[in-house]
Amino acid sequence: MAVSDEEWRNKEVKNDFELKTPDVVDPIEKPTVKIPKIKIYTDLISISSYLKCDNIEFVNDINEAEVIWIFGEVEQFKNNQKLSRFPNQLCVTNPLYLKLMLSKVYGNNNDILCESYDMTTEMTEFVGSYLANAKKIEEEKKNQKEKSKVKTIETNNFWILKPIFGNNGSSRPSQWIITDSLQKIIRQHDTKLNMIIERFNNGKKPLLYNNNVKFQLRFYALLNSTMDGLSLYMYDQNYIVYLAKEFWSDKLSSVYNKEIHFVKYKKLRETTKADEANKNINHVPYIHHTKLEKYIEQQYHCKWSDIKDKIYKNIKGIYSIK
Image 1 (tube, rainbow, N blue to C red):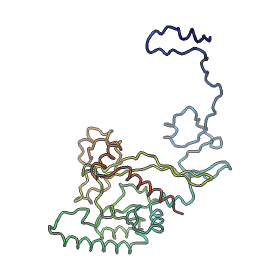
Image 2: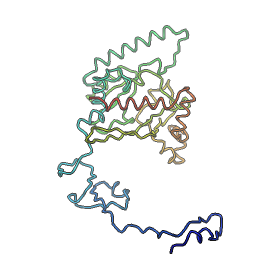
Image 3: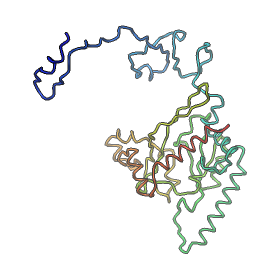
Image 4: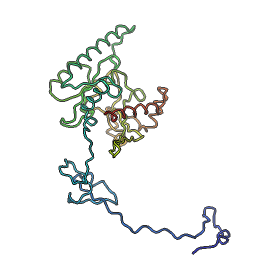
């Protein structure tokens, strides 16, 4: 029932929090039109168990599905169905093809990827680079006034061997081999396992948090294909993973092995009392990405925005290759 302006102004307010508004509009009713549910077919227990949403419906017949989310390959498609893949996407998703593409466009020593070689076809080039770096390191040691016997990253030839996707299992840090021994690398080459080898941080000292925690920053990119071409979107926040053991540059080879590798910070918050007593776990407090950014700015007297711009520029350089 509507009221006049004079009656509304003279209406008594019971408390200071009561809004003095005229009752001139009836409440809006919820729409009666039902939104059709999206039909999903999946053979993954993790999807059927944890994908909870009111506007989806799981179906048992794949022909009735509007979205197919399965573990295996999809062999047949209808005219209106699309696959979330891009032509020649292996140039980005496969480490070997990514290395070959960047080397062809930007050269083997570029700002996007560390110096790297295919152990199947570029072993000769790698050995030449290894020996040249070893000679340079020995000359630098001779020129030092105080010779140090402690091995550090800055005075050694450390290389990382990574399996190429397509072998048994994916190329995860737990499968990496890091060494400065040429003999060990050559023996690994004789195993006929397809691997890519890259120089650790191009011979430079890695960035450490509090001088003892090595970490990685992972950025998420969304690549979309439209009539106007490809569009690249970046998630503005990065995801942090860290080394599960304190990082000592004089014990680099022992730090990187199959038991101690990069893990997620989330696991740190789920550790048990037994894990807390484990000396192999690096007990570092959870670090928010903003805290890490402030640490980098204060420690190295720079702006995080400038660093992020360089990272985005390199990511854009990968997807801008024609």
